Figure 1 (cartoon, rainbow, N blue to C red):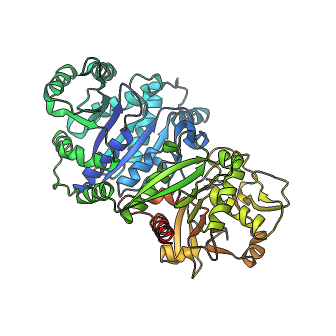
Figure 2: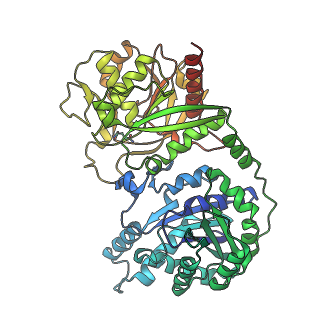
Figure 3: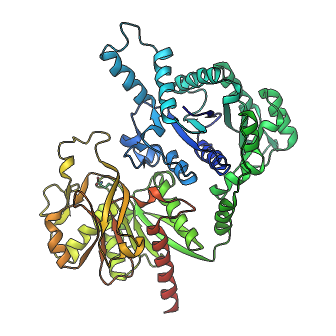
Length: 535
Ligand code: GLN
C-alpha cells in the first residue's frame, strides 16, 4: 500500500486528458524526490484492451511483463521513471472475472456475492497490491462521472478515502469549462453539476482542474469554488496546449503540486523542471524539419498510433528537428501510382488484418528502390521480408501465412507457440524479450551494444526455413532473439537506412530518452533530405 493516494476522476465530457494530467502531476512529484506510481482503472467489461480495435479504443500499450493495457500507461511511462506492469491497469472485466471465479470455487462460503462489498473489496485489493511501497499513488478512474459502469470504482475510492483519512488521500476532478461564443462567456454550470454528482456518491473533490480554451479569470474561479464547496486556490486551469510536454510546467507554475503537498501533509524539495523546459524549448525552436509518410490503415491515427507518434517526435527532439507526419491510407496506395516524392522517409507501423497489405508492400518496394529511409515495425517488418522475397529473391508467391495460408513460400508464418491458441485474448507473444545483435550491422550501429530487450505483440514470425536463401540474396539479419532464434531485425545491403523490426521500439521511447532507433531514423531522414536538396 502506498503512503498517500491521489484519486483522479473526470466529469462533463470524456477525452479531457486525464491520463496526461495524471502523468504530469506524477512527474512533478517525482522531481520533488518522491517515489510515484500511477494506476489506471477502466470501467469496461473487456478483460483488457487486447481484444479491442485500436480504431475504437486507441493504441494497445504493452508493458515489459507482457500486459496489453490502456494507452494512458504509455503517457505514464513517458513521463515517469517508474515502469508500468500488469498491475498498473485493470478493468471491471478483470474484477468481475476474479470475483466470479472465487465464487465458483466456494470462496465466499455461502454468502450472497454483491457489488458492495465483494466487487468493491476486489477493486481496493488490486489498488493496494499495485501501489505497494510507493510514497504516492495516483489512481486514475477511466470514463466520466455519471456513467453507470464506473460506480463501483467510485464507491471503492469513497471507501478508501474514508478509511485513509483526510491527510492521506485527496480527490482531483478534471472538468470542462466551455466558452460560449454568442454569450462571450465561460460556462461553469456543467462543472458545478459534475462536482455535485461526485458529491452524491460521497466524494468531495479537493482540487479541480478545468480544461478550457481560454484562461479562467479570478472571478470565474471564485464562482466555481463557491458552488463546488472549494477554496479558489484549489481551482486550476488546464488550457489547451500545442505541446503536451508543457503540461507539467503549466501545472507547476500554477502551484498545483504545492497544494497537493499541503493537503497530503507531505514535505519535499522544490522540483527542478529544467528537463521539461529543455524539451519544450527544443520543440518550439526546431532547426530542421522532415516529412514522414506513415502508410497504414487509418480511422483514428492519432490515438491508434499514440506511442509511435510520440517516439517520432522524440527522435525529432534528439535531432532538433520538427517531424511532420502524414498518414497515408495503404488501400489508396494499392490502387494508385502514388509518389512519395514529397516525403523524406517512409514508415510502416504494426497492424493486423489483410486490408491494404499490397499497398504497404508497394510502399516498401518504393523505399527500397529509391533508397529512401525506411522503418517497418512488426507487421511492417514482416512485409519487408515478403517484398524482398518476391522481388529480390524471386520467390514467386512469397507471402505471409496470415494473409494467404496456402502460399508457395510462407516467408512469414505462425509461431509454433501460437498454433493452439485459437486467437484468444492475451495469447500473442507479448512483452519484453532479449535479442543478440549481429556485429557490423545497422542494428549494431543504432544501439551500440550487443544485446537488447524490446517489447513485442505478435503471432507471426520470420520463417527460418527461408533464412539461408534470403541471406544469400542479401537480406541482413541484424538481431536474433536469444531463446527462440527468432529474427528480430532485418536490413538491406546498399541502402542508406532500411530497418524492419519485429518488436515495437515506440513503447520504450521517452521525450528525455528518445529510443535509439527513432533518433537514428530521424537523423537518416535529415541526411536524405539534405543530400537530395544538394544534388
Ligand atoms: N499481425 C502481425 C502478427 O500478428 C503483426 C502484429 C503487429 O504488427 N503488432 O504477427
